[in-house]
Image (cartoon, rainbow over all chains, first blue to last red):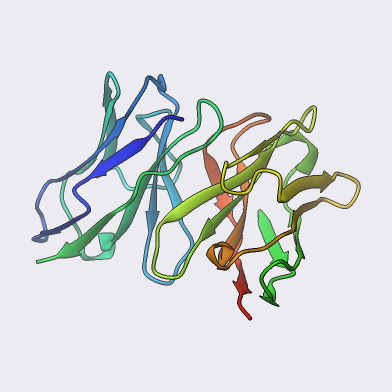
Length: 107
Length: 120
């Protein structure tokens, strides 16, 4: 099975900082990669699908990119409401594995 | 408005069974794949199972294969997860989830979740 390795597992950044989270697939998944945001005590929310397509209603400070089997979620200017855990998920084939998550906090 | 309402969670002894239900509304249920995702207390997300929206093809995580069965009743807009031979490590909040397309896809809607606790 394809493994999804997210890094870092946690980060602390200041409001306005550019934040980057990486997800590496152990094998090719093409563009079948989604990013989710889960705020404390809430259900996950889809941010990006197809590696770089922004879900409707998601602020434009969120973006996704792909380079081979490496995927990146970028928050261009971190806001207080972005405190959450972020997960990647591959969905090219089963199992639809999630990454381990990246916890983002404000410094 | 898309709504997914799970039920059926609770406390069960190891080796026992539970059936989770998820009633969907606000979209054409038959034309979307559906999934179950779980989250153990304080842990990350774990995909459990999915069923397509066209030919009802089913998929399972290795951790539940042979013990859990996903199914859907399109006439009732309801998704099910039959869980047998439950283990302590199955303890989690189980989310019902709608995928973006007929086949495997990203998840664009989530239910609020139902807690399953496996303990003696």
